[in-house]
Length: 331
Image (tube, rainbow, N blue to C red):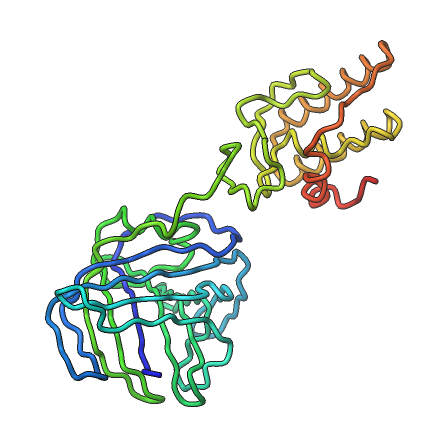
């Protein structure tokens, strides 16, 4: 197996994006080759093109280590795989690699399949997406993605979460580099310029339009266009999206057990409202509106002797999300 290294670097000005734990995603980069030296055939081309697909799974929970030199935050297994192809001017493939993450690189080079942010004493920050595949005890294929501002300073990885496609919206330079790697030395084989960064693959289905893919949505069919209703009573509170595609309405509905006495169900709803307020997910005004609406619904139930909440198809799906806030079960 040839020993190759691919580095995709960028010089960009980027805004800070919130990070969140998401499933594996991918983005594509492509561009023109300035040159490429094929060590197998000995052929060198001064034109051509390249393509690469980067698979990544960001994590929002870093391992933080501090020392005299600064603080390092490591986000585990950010990049899971990078595949790339280099072509000559006629479109013939010169080389291709599919680099898969492995925990043991067996080499002096410390790439370990994680994203690292380092802040030194001067305030400079560095970040890189690293990836390693064990090829043998002394050699391996490797790839990384790094982001730099226009002055060449690498930006913290949080700046490119959660969507690397935002990179294409900013000015700066993008480059592709290929290396021949040995245990202690690397020799650059190719250089190119990235001209395109696009989403990989087809659009994922999102039936309810909440921005959460159907295959990751625990509450399919949520309606965020309406306010939160409790027993057909409008609270006037925005039905905001919470975790795993579940909305505020879904969680309130999941807090109700139709087989429980009314007083017990009301206590569960109020407990959820209090927990959401404590986590600053809803405002004090929203909490008061929800509590008032629930009390009105309970009063109406006592007066008319009718079933308080009808069964919701979201109830079971949303319950495990609800438990994150309340900390106890409802069976």
